[in-house]
Image (cartoon, rainbow, N blue to C red):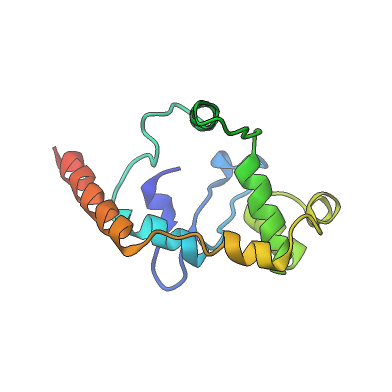
Amino acid sequence: MQWEDLRFDSDAVMVIEAENSKVNLRRVPRILPNLVKWLKPFQGLTGPINPEYSNEGALQAAVIHCAQKAGVNLPRNTFRHCYISYRVAQPTVPGIVAEETGTSAAKIKSNYQALATKNEATQWFSIAPNDTQVSKFKKHAKELKKNQKK
């Protein structure tokens, strides 16, 4: 994904073009409020979000490697599975979650319903940076922007 794919105007969304989607369909899911807090300081950057990684698999392998070094077992697609499970538990209509994640409502119903509680979902979607972290992100983003202009 590119930074330009993230839109922070009235409704924060990410534009996932068909060629970047595993099901070859364009979709425009909402960026939930807690994720906006993590990403908004980087608004205005251009180019790949993860330029050090050649593809999604390389990034995922790096995350799993870091988790292993920390002694944490992080199975493949953990964050996707958590997102879907907690989103359904909020509760959110399975069709909406399916649209957000590029899968089917039937798969959401059969694989994810009742895996998490509403309270767990509230906790998951309340994970957000504090003011100090946001300030550091803004400073980092400013440096990145400066480097992009060179």
